[in-house]
Length: 255
Ligand code: PEP
Image 1 (spheres, rainbow, N blue to C red):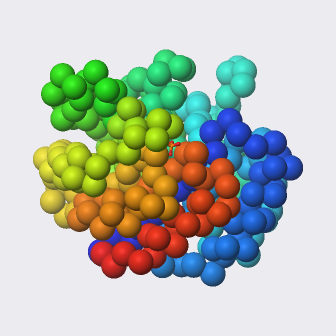
Image 2: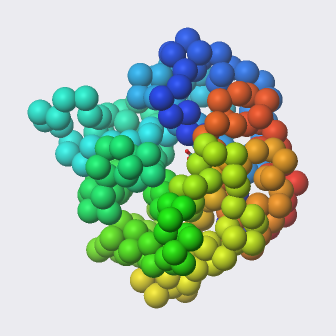
């Protein structure tokens, strides 16, 4: 039994004040919900303010990125221990925007996962193909390479602390959602891959989120697929009503 997990990736949006307003409004709508896990990932500068407001809440807090070193001359970066010290428990790693615009590779994703785990942070590790790869019939090859590279040399115990997110890049921020069947096919493939890389038991326990233009209207269809265990939400997490709508729609699904 895998509990659904809905995470909001606020990306480079919201000033600290706007972040406070958003989390205050979201709490009003979903604070009592514990049927699904809810996580918000604001910018690094809003983490502390948002954490203050989450003291009395089920909502979890995550960062959007980290550096694999603990400290040092890495201007502009933040480390796992810094994220943990603020009270966050999750961190997104390997988002396609970081792979596309900031040179993130499977190797750096792997180093970041290990750094996060060392501090007991739960990594949300993103994989996904671009449109040309899908059209060339290479989706499974790309996913295999990203999973094998990103998850290299992890123990079963370590893998058990990771959440995966399948995010077809062509569906991110485009309004084009993968159909429930398209998403399920890849989620099932990832679970089979995890069985080979780790074990059947482990593969059955890992939560795999779908991400890519998730909105309230498509949530129930996606979440009712057998291998989809949640959503990583970008645009629709920036307004409390739309994010709360996704969370509430997820609560209607019994897994
Ligand atoms: C994302 O960036 O992780 C994402 C899924 O964005 P959106 O929901 O806006 O497509």
